[in-house]
Image 1 (tube, rainbow, N blue to C red):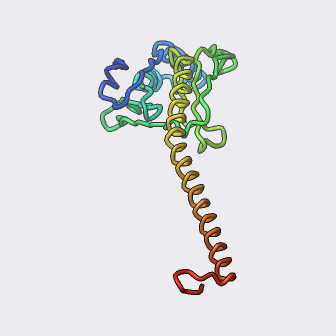
Image 2 (image 1 turned 180 degrees about the horizontal axis):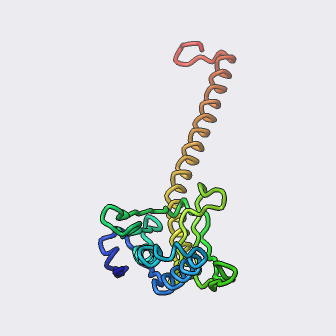
Image 3 (image 1 turned 30 degrees about the vertical axis):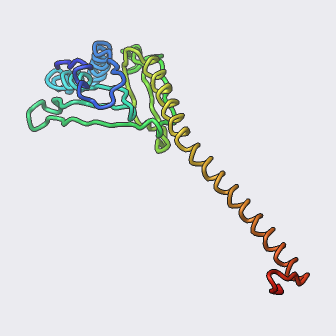
Length: 216
């Protein structure tokens, strides 16, 4: 499949901060090798692998794009061929945005070990960035980004922007809280003054003071 340049793909994205590239060659090499070795165990699936599945894997990987915007992490899988690779089996474009204020975790899962059939395993070479939110349950991540060229740079930027967003929100809320405190303080002072005036009037009334020939 044709790989679209990441910066071109998000050229019109509002609030774009930075785009991050996938290592498509590494992803395609690992995923196709793993699928081929799994297909070797079931010989009848080999024709399907060479006819469709290999190209489907490559197109699906090449269709992935991700960037960081002021709104959050934006992950997109572009329109690509799937299934039997005919027009009626095209997979439509999907996009997902994870807002910074919803992110609870953004960690890197380094590659280790091997995968596939015991007799012909493939070394795991793909690192993943796992993004979680409060709604992530049962070990299912909100977004999994496999094969980023710079996973550590991505993680660093996400946490940096998240801290900035949280500090801006906190800065907007603080003045409102201060204003409320001042209003409460003024009301308390007014209440104290009214009580003092009431006590003075009661004292005057009890003493029977005459003001302008009128007895109070």
